[in-house]
Structure formats: structure tokens, C-alpha cells
Image 1 (cartoon, rainbow over the protein chains, first blue to last red):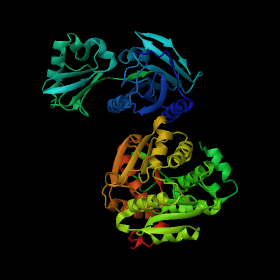
Image 2: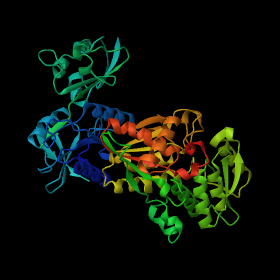
Image 3: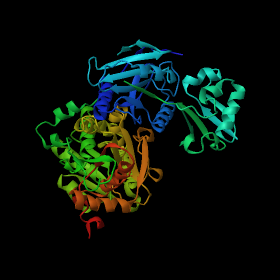
Image 4: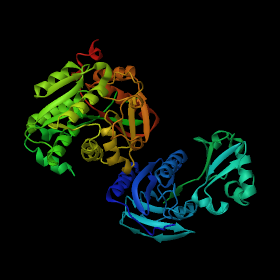
Length: 143
Length: 92
Length: 304
């Protein structure tokens, strides 16, 4: 099983993530990144249904389910090459930097095989990609 | 009543690496019990000590959220697909 | 491979330069009570009067680039009308002869406009619809090598035009805030092309078809009962909807009376479907309105 240690995220997908983030402000935007072999080929916007959306995100479960099925149908894989799992999960930080917060780190235990892509609407660098494994944040290359 | 259960990658270790398995049961509780019989420890990953779905675990029976069709007593029609989807969340 | 820059370069200084770059207009009264914003992309603003100006131009330029058109050539296609007008416009400017196979039931305006641009028409059995015209075009193309059959139903330049112009325009005009695009399926070029441009950016693609084989939504195809275009692939759309002729006509009339948007039945059908989505989902929905109401003045649509 191939393990991708860097994420290829084409310019137009980054632009789309920023557009989603900008358009969702002051709420956090969230969504999925689908692809294969560490190369992202599309993003899937999801609804943020958290109570405190300017500071938290919770992806609508039916959006998530639909996205997972679509990834399975398309043969898309996560960072470990498993079919039907997200290559990446993205969300925006409106006022803080593009680095996983303690909340992000804790919640990532449930989806350990995806890249975590964060964008910041207020600080540079505006985008970062990470693997979050067992409470540890590992920055990864973003190509 | 035979159903297909799809599990996320995060639960792979609880079922010896399988993310798609067949199970039997007429309700969600029975399906989970059936999987527990074959993979001890699975139950605790999705249910709390009172036997209810953990807050951060979503279960879909077909395209309906199990919590909206009876929770643990939700009927699981023969041939349907049960999908376990952990919550995907975070914050700043 | 054609690019938007190359095509623009080829038509600089002619009316064909005005193809594309169509306006995006928000709906107000019709969108009242909806959860999402509803915007229409007004393809009737193209110089040939319809969205088909785009694939019409790209198919002809592609044939020229591939050196398929010589002095003796006659460009040929089967069309329910709008593509015929588009090809006629393009061929007039590019100085090519053009023959169009068209079902006889197509509105008189379309036939007259095509002829005004210098096209010749072969009218096929109205009962066989567009499929009858397609069969006739294939027959002619097989028989005589002078015909350059551009075949909008199979020509990759058709969806390519939408992938490289219509889709990117929608993205730029909404600053990337478009969340859904709703378009009808005829040749399917629009849906396929827009999907290629926008689906990967997270935009939900909604394809709409008529709800019946015997429908009055001119330009659209009821796929289950029709000859399937080679360029069509259901998987390009996230959602498939259908619309009835009655709903289409009702909405077409509302668009004129309540928004000042004068379109044909396919425009009404697309907006009717989009409104149903707008009531359920949030975001910014862009609907393709393919042509203007003038082409239907002789039909029952506008007889009050």
C-alpha cells in the first residue's frame, strides 16, 4: 500500500479552498479533498454544522457520507492508498494561523489517514498541510 | 437478515483490517452484536458503556441517519448497507 | 489542442469575438423565499443568440486547425436549431459553405435566421425529431467526402468550449463563490464541459432532462429514449433532475413577467429545476439560460 508523504494540491484547488474559506467567513469553512496516490484532483465543499462556527467546524454527516460514497465509486484513495477514504480534509481558521489547534489534533484521531490542510484568512503562511497521528502534528510538503 | 457494513479506515484495527463486511441482524443493536461476536472489542469503539451510539459516531442505514430512525432499535432491512461514519470536526 | 487564447486570436476583429463573456444576472422575485441565491447566465446575449455560439465556433476553428476544411468543403451538422444558427453565423464570417439537417418542426425563426446567414437546410421528418436529422447527416457524410461533418453530439470541441470558456467565466464572475451550476442536457456539451472546469473546485453539477420522451423543451434530450451523444457521461453530474414541459412553460412566462428575462422553454425548465434546489440548499446557484424568447414567438409559448 503506497504511503504518500507529501500532498500535490494544484493551484486551482487551492484557489477553490480559499474561495470557500473567504465566502464562509466569519464561519470556518470545511470540506474534503479527493484524489489518488497523493495527488488531489478535486475538492468537495461540505456544510459546517457546528454550534460555534466561527471557532469550530463539524462536517454535516450526510455531506460526508455522500462524499465518501462518491470517492469509493471513483476509486479515490487516502494518504495510505485506501479506497473510498478522503485524501485530505480542509478547513479554515478565520483569526488564527494555518496550523492545527489542540481541537484539530484531538479530533483528528477519528480520521488518521488523511492529510489535514488548513488555510488562514488572517495570517501568513495562508496554507499548510499536515499529517496528524496519535496526537502528533507532522508538517508535510505541499506541491 | 444479511446486510453489508462499511467501516471507516479508523476502525480497521478493530476488525482485523476489514472495512467492508457482511453481518446479520434485524436492528442496529443486533448488527453490532453480530460484529462483536466475530471481532471482540468492536462494540466498545462505537457504543458507550450504556450501550448507546457514541456521540461522535454516525451510523447510516441506507441513506437515513440511524439516530432518526430509532437509534439502536432502528430496523435494518435485509440487503441494506450500514455505514459507520465518525464525526469529522475541529476548531481553531 | 484548442485553447481560449487561440480561438480568440483567430476571430479578433470580427463579430465572433463577442461570443462568450455573457452576463450573470441575479433573480429577485422568482427567488423569493429560496435559501440559495439564484443567478442566470444569459447565453441569449451571444451574437448568434444562443449558448451554441460557443461550440459552434470551437468546432469550426478545430476543423480549420486540423486542416479538414478546404475550398470545396461543405461544413455539415444535424441540429434542432440553435447550433444551426451558430454554425451559420461562424461559417458566414469564416467563409465556409454550410449544410444543416434540421427536423421540420423547428421554429420558423431558426430556419430563417440560418438561411439569412447563408446556410442551406435539409429538413427532416418532424416525427423523428433530432435523431432523424442526425441519421440524415450521417448518411450524407458517408456518401460525399466534401462534407465536413462537425457532429456536435460527438465532437470533443463542443464540451471543450464550455470547459475553457463557460465554466471559467462562471467561476470568475462569482469570484469562486458559485456552489451549484444547473444546466439542461441536449448534446450534453454544456454540462460535460462545465463539470470538467468546475466540479473539481467543489461546485455541484446538476444536469436536467425533460421528464418524458414526448416533450416540448426544445434543445433538450430525454436520454433514456434518444440516440445517446458520444460525449455524454452521466457521472459528470452530481445530481440528475427532470422537468416537465408544463413547468418549463410556466417558468418561462414568469421569467419574462417578473424578471424581464425573455427566454425559451429550456431556459424556463432550467430555472424551474434550479428553484427547487434553491429552496433546499444554501449557496449561490448559477443556471444556464440557453437562448432568447424571440426564437419561439411563432410557437404556442407566447400566444396568450
